[in-house]
Image (cartoon, rainbow, N blue to C red):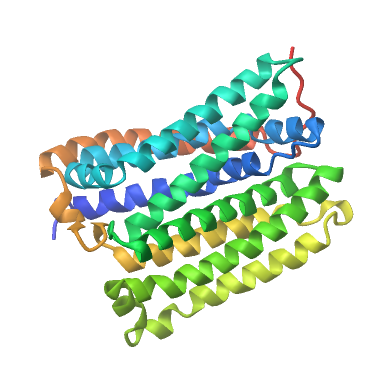
Length: 332
């Protein structure tokens, strides 16, 4: 087969890559928003400072993923938006609320900063719950009924816990002193909920989806895939044990919880990819069925080949420049 015949699958992989990077990068700053403590304004400001240089650029990956879905797979985009129109509206409300409150807290030097911090936390919660709910509806191919809705609600709670988990891990890496200790405490507890959620969804998904059950439980796939949940369990335990020791001497290994949480995101994403590839919409549309014309994909491919490396380079540069511990946030 020539490369043109593989273009739908290539774009599906690129879209999946954008979703994964978004989940990790915007996931931690959503998690920081979820964890904002309303009892300590200096700590809230330090937490905002830890994500300030990154959070807006992190959302670029969501724009890229949705853009690929719209242009490369228009039929799938139409189906997804039709089924998830209301949740998508709530997602936009959450993102807008986050953006407005993030900037307005800088202007509210005296009177209303606490209210904008509440708004930022609310926007983070709305966004996280909605993303998880949409994921739950998506992986069950938009099935109706109370079981499917319950699964989507469970997914929303678990995804929010996962974001809080990686957000707390980010703060352990970026903060010092009392905030670092509190972040380790928050992250441990969020990690327990995230681990329970991963286990529950891993059990429920094959039960409610015959296609997933066939892929995961058939021989010899079941033996080849066993390392994924085992590695997830090991990572969760290791991170939990590390967080119990925070602060460590000379802050040794402060990066470990964040890297391990990112690996957990990667492993769970690989599990989902294995479950559904090459479907754009599980059980309904494959990449080949939903793809635009080959000429359109070739044209789009040129743009993606230019834009994707630029976004990667900018992201790497931003994280390199602002590496290290966050400092006190000051407004002038």
